Amino acid sequence: MEILQAALLGIIQGLTEFLPVSSSGHLELAKFFLGDTSAAEESLLMTIVLHAATALSTIVIFRKDILEIFRGLFAFENNEAARFSGKIILSMIPAALVGLLFEDAIEQLFAQQVPLVAGMLVITGLLLFLADRAKTTGREVSWSHALIIGIAQAIAIIPGISRSGATISTSVLLGIDREKAARFSFLMVVPLILGKIAKDVLDGDFAETPNLVPLLIGFTAAFITGLFACQWMIKLVKNSQLSYFAIYCFIIATIAILAWAL
Image 1 (cartoon, rainbow, N blue to C red):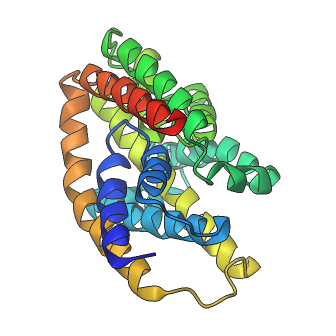
Image 2: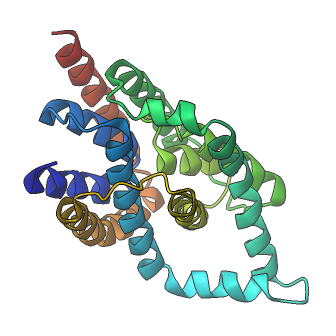
């Protein structure tokens, strides 16, 4: 993979991980348009590295919240921090189970499946339209909410379904306060990404020595752009401006399927 391609993929990941337009879907479309011929394993490795970069962006932005989560994990009383930590853990279970049970099938989805990505982008757009028109009741994230949001995150493993779009839209449709929905959405993915990276290292899935330069370039680009995109997305959710991204998803899906067909 060329350095310029890696930088471009990093920028795309940094922006689209937090914006509700599917980072995995955009990465697969970018690889298609750039003519990336990497093997599925190498392509997936780049995807994992880029997600690690945006996970680090999340940790930097939400460092105080993450510290509270760790305090909650080791709390010996039923306080707010402990309950929030428990809800984060509960929300991780569906995606973790899907990732473990269907790992090989999921890997094949990250092989420039353009029609699949286009179709899932349309679904993402519809979700965003619904969320923008939902009434907010200002609810907190409950235990049942955490499980439902976790199921939405598991479905968003499919490239083209925006993880942030699916989880935030689901939260808003449940009546959860928009800012709290965005905060919960971004925090719940960090342990999953870090866990996936640790599993791949322990399993030796990438035993062959990869080209580290493109990975480093991609990681840096994704991290820097992710810092800006994360803060921007929180403001957009609060101001109910998700419909613009729904329209964007429809446009990109149309362009992608036309390019693939031709």
